Image (tube, rainbow, N blue to C red; front, side, top):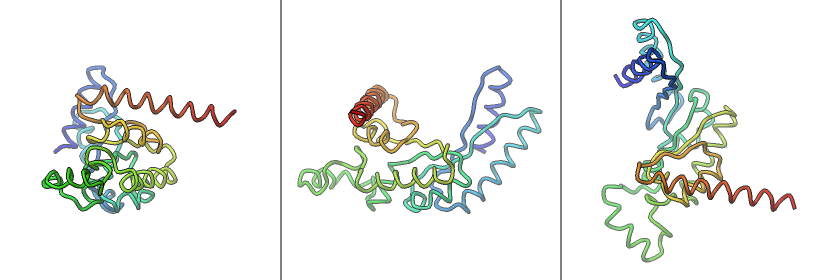
Length: 203
């Protein structure tokens, strides 16, 4: 139903003269076989709409990396996926084994007692979850060098997390509307910082 709605909307946009490139993203996939299985239904649905509407549009098929297994087998997933979007809220939850429903009852105490440096649901855990993200980007691009990678979730509006995303080569960050100005500023700072490092190495 969702695939049909996306493709039908894209076709309507094309007919209205609006250029679009929809991205069909499968959440919580853990294996290539799962992505392959669901791709069949996606393609069948899209082809049916194209036949009914007597026109076609290009679209991308990808996945949201939200479970640790997806991150460590990203080279396999990239054989099917055309893009990755890291769902770091769920990836953090599954990596730590914390439930977001009750984490608020103990995480402030963990931070206060310095068990954790900061709340991992607010600022990306670079040492753990971040390693999974970096690994997935590296493995995915070994299979598909032009693989588009981004992040989706509240971490996309955290300056420290945005800087990390820039360092590991993500193409974009996505976040809540009210966090967009902060994310844009953080992305600019990260780019300037990287240029500064590059100039320093040349000297």
